[in-house]
Image 1 (tube, rainbow, N blue to C red):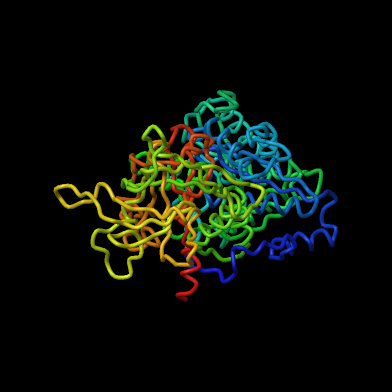
Image 2: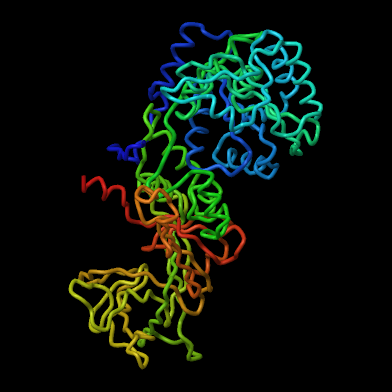
Length: 572
């Protein structure tokens, strides 16, 4: 069970690199006590059977930062012990995502590199009477393990002698037995309260092609048998895992105690995983979303995968800061997605270039705009600031002329109360341009405006009136003669409920069917032709948008300008 939490700190505050938590305190105690004769070594150990998501980001940040803070190293190790689900494309994607997040592993390793050593150690346990071959089915073994409050039942094959077990195990290795007919189990304690110690399976027969070792092996180690031993082989000191592995720690330690290790055994510590509101991170659920066509793929910007967040425009630095900010705890909790968005918004406010774009265009005509000697409307160049947060980003020149595009929402023939944008008789400021007064509009047969007419005050260049008169609204625009066509995707929450599936047990029941809206007739400032793939810019008054990596002129809304997390804090 996870609890819903909100942080009370300000996301704009920089994290303290010397912050303390129970994991860092444990590492500090180990160093002070001289527990290890080697420096701090950590590892991030994903299984290459899917794509990384925001939950993995917390583990990555913790693994690498613990090593960095203590002058140690962090490795990337693929726990590739299940050939039926793993693939090289996942390996490549994970390496890419880890590096995009800002980390370079000291080395890239694979559990499959250690298959021979693991096999030899398994034979060692058999020879010591600590492992045996069981001929029972998976169903029989599961039933005999019992449960909490129910005693386990020993296998009828538990007391086979070491020689017979070695012979059978080697036959399993050589492909002489069919899949599912036998397994190798550790011989520990079938009455132990910790279910993980009730003679766990160490090896299964799998006559399956492995993406790295190909057809060399007919048996494959379990995660628990490979994991701790991989840590020991690599010299890991601190094995950091999420809370679901807390019951596995006793087995982790038992295996290591039986082996002739060259150095000190690694130590496992568990921490709470990361969950977000309006989001699911279960690999099974994410796979269902993709395969059932609820999203367009693993990089659909509505998903929490790292490749999806990158495509949406989330800066890696903002994700790192968010993970550091929420810290490390021993209790699973669910954080507001608005908090993550607040970190993204804070980062982009500092770095994103400002541009103008009109998503739902409406033509605006300045009827008293001057013409040149050839009777053509004069084109002026207005100077606009690229980023008010950084003077070094300078300015740009933007064309301004008689016909402009404005947002449909910025005009009303019959304005509602407290509507201060354009309507007949009102004056507004055009961003960086002039003050204009609406004189009317041309409407279609249904009464919808198709062209707004205004006059401008030539004494108000830049948007300021010499006589000091004030206007209550500033609207953005794009020059019609120089605009480029584009499209944008606007995203809402993928799930309607804060805790998807809480009521029905199935998050798919809470899907928001209209979570994306694509606008295809947008008008963009000409400089957006130069937007590079995945570059994020601020569309003034509209939010932050990321250029698509492949489709030219298409942008994904990253986040809006309004800080929803700050609003939530005020409501508390």
